[in-house]
Length: 409
Image (cartoon, rainbow, N blue to C red; front, side, top):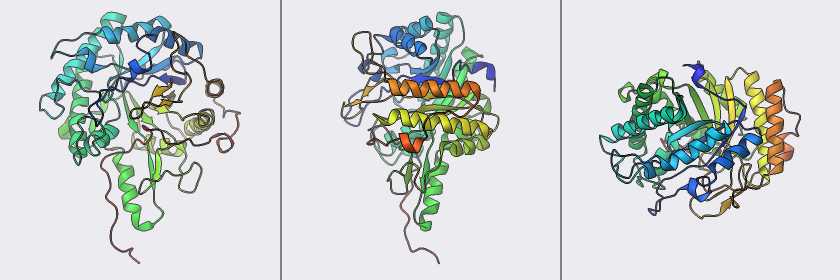
């Protein structure tokens, strides 16, 4: 792992929601467009910089770039790329954020090669346009996409009972992209971002079910790193940073009920990150997505700050935390405006700023710079769980079957 590839000039970064998948009803989403980020990327990045967030996650919209097989129109990406360059923001670009062009069949044997061609071309374009190698997440949240698209039919490829098979295919594509990027630009940075969950049970008869769900969250990364399923082509050298996406609803009881914040059964983020660091020793870690909705935003960020400090004290090589999404956005399924992040919806070239969230970010940034615990109020007093947003639970494959039979004595 080349730590020189990992550029995080501030501890806190901001992520622009860039999902572009087809829903179960066939409608193509384009959240970059829906939030107006495509039109005011330069202003968005300048606003991010002025708030002290000096790095970001953002994404390419593959379905707009490759409408004819093998021919790339980079116009949609260049507006975002130029905006980031003007602000001096260090960006980690998602090459595939759930969205697959209609001209490609994700199940086809040549899909990984088509994805690799796209990744290599993007890496080369970044170097030509900026004069330096890029930073990329080849495929965002393989675990979630496998479940949502292959197990539940919520998004493309909109099938059920094929989650494990889809995870295999996504890993093949992800590994092919990573290798192609490295061939095109050997100094390019590679980030992986997977859901970080905890599952608990109230009945010891269900402990195996809970343990299986927890273990499943590591499966895609284990394959990518070549720890298991070597037939998929993985290699530890393909990861510069391992990212974890964690939201208030990423902990649940067997059966699906969310574990209340701070209740028995709830496990603190620092402990979860410590387990990840022990499993993937030698790889720097990133909290690649986190955030809450509405009045819970600031309290959640205070909690995140305390847990990040604790995690670093426990020896976790944590590089940063990404507020995600950093802007409000229309919900995937119902188009409601989700009150997330730091910035409101676009009004011309402006966005309203959520002052309590900004104060929490500034406190976290200052605390991390001092390597001290933030002095802000504790999470129990400030974090109020909101209703679960339509994108909140980042669950995983393999899904666990309910336990049956009687409990052994």
